[in-house]
Length: 226
Image (cartoon, rainbow, N blue to C red):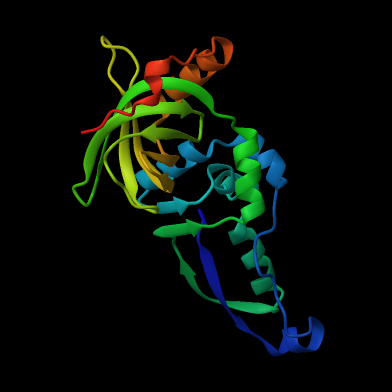
């Protein structure tokens, strides 16, 4: 996903000695679990964007599993099979876009790894289809939140979300957040893209909510809206 790929041509040598097969990938240099401990998916997504590689991922931890450093150097492997006569290099491609999905099991694991904490922060949101609105963040985690709002949004929509923490501080801006579910007056967001500075602020806020839980008030039940 990060380092590109090759088109290889078959050879008679491969038919004779390797059942007409050759390498299908570079092979992992670290386990998926180790990659997730080493790499932040959000930062990896931003780094690829700066290199001109657009990435859409259902799960940021799933994206971290596919970091370039988690794999062996593909060029070395291709050179080896080329010199051995098992395959011949035809073309090399460079990535310009990646889509990384995940199974339902992975999605459930993602939710368990990042619990949400009750909160009440004013928020505003916009989308490329000129939907805009305001509301309250009712719970928050490092990967997503629930927003209470009178503005209707559609599942699958991508929003830019601004969470206003304190009056004298700029809001935390989540560049891309996808709507995963909607109910009357509420919808759930998964965070897909934050710049590193905003990611650090979000982590700090969630840690503070964990250490000092927000105490809900009776007035919290009424959602705000645009």
